[in-house]
Length: 365
Image 1: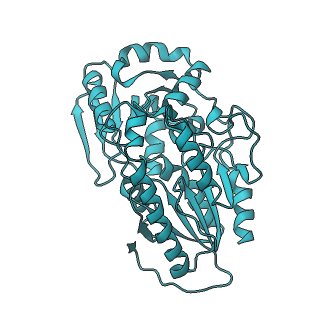
Image 2 (image 1 turned 180 degrees about the vertical axis):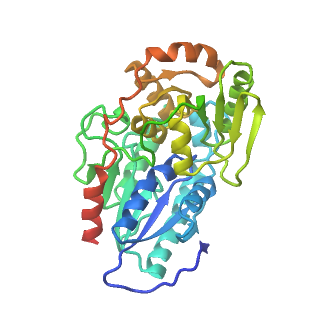
């Protein structure tokens, strides 16, 4: 359902772009924010499409833009088994992809779209207009199911005119084997540099630790509870950004633990830059944010999410961050050891290299 008044019309000059990030936590939506901002700066009209918390975030960030709710993939991580979590949901996910493709084709016709940028929504493409898939997972890691999942992914990748990878072309980049793998990149694969809504700058320290929570339930809530149980008894000042986008709530859990349900990009940037250390999931969008901020962090992969486990292990092995498992958390130990890490040096990765490619793509529509 379209929200915000929007009148369909044809215009030979105006470019109308659909941006559709996957609702798998907040990361896919947050890394689309710089693309949306640049599209507006280039004079394009933007429609936003997603579901759940990702759509809530987009509405909060871009209240002036029209939004469309897409079919939900209903991703949950009830167990530490990736095979079980995804395998039992795969038929429904494929059904949701088919449904979102039908919705996308209707939107192309109804709103005279010029182009589509889909972040990991494999059904958001059209053969009538140029469609781009934004993804860092050219080589999906699903132990026990790779034989089934990878051919399915390759089929969907083939439906798009271009694949944009939010990483640098030189391996290992930030995503390692997820994007670079062992095969030569396809001609339609373009590395666009890291995408983040955040930037680093000098700010006085207000918090010892900022905890950024995100990802599918129930693991988001499980992690929050386990971190709170330790943080309340440590001699440090914490702020928890809970990643709950439905309503804004700000309160103190204990004298040393502040909690806020949701922050806009500017507010979040200020809080993170005024925090000495960060604790977060090891989702790829979080890694790109950390690269922009130059902060040291403790990474806690979502149990059963093999992509996050891979990123946490490889980036810890490179000395950038500490990695801890959710069922073996020890914040006190982590904060003692975190100074042995380097963090990703601020400005080591450019955050604006996507702009020439985006401008050229928009001009080609």
